[in-house]
Length: 103
Ligand code: SF4
Ligand code: SF4
Image (cartoon, rainbow, N blue to C red; front, side):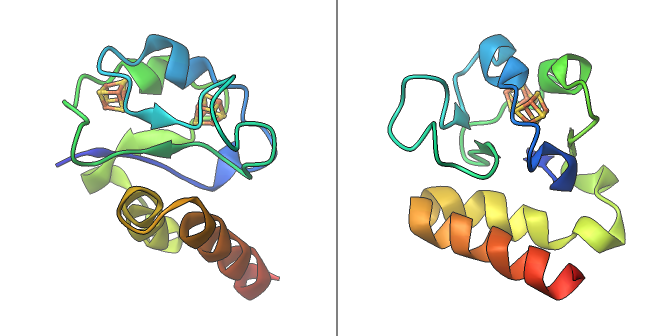
């Protein structure tokens, strides 16, 4: 399993979760490439150790265990994964597609 960042991060992106993650698997953190322009932050599912620290840290309850993701945010599992497997642009494009579909 892994943790997932979901819709409430969009537009909030305060990066508290990246500060507390013990394995540094949440990006782009402040100062990293694309940090200023990213729509949201993303968890690397291949690195996450399911420690739960990002859940406490997030002020808008955007982070959650994969098994707790509600149906309307199911696509964010794929979005977080795609960000690391396919790159920044792929992840960002999927977020824009989600927002367009949501209306
Ligand atoms: S659950 Fe822990 S390891 Fe996984 S992203 Fe959150 S803080 Fe990082
Ligand atoms: S703490 Fe929450 S709102 Fe802030 S970057 Fe992390 S997931 Fe997004």
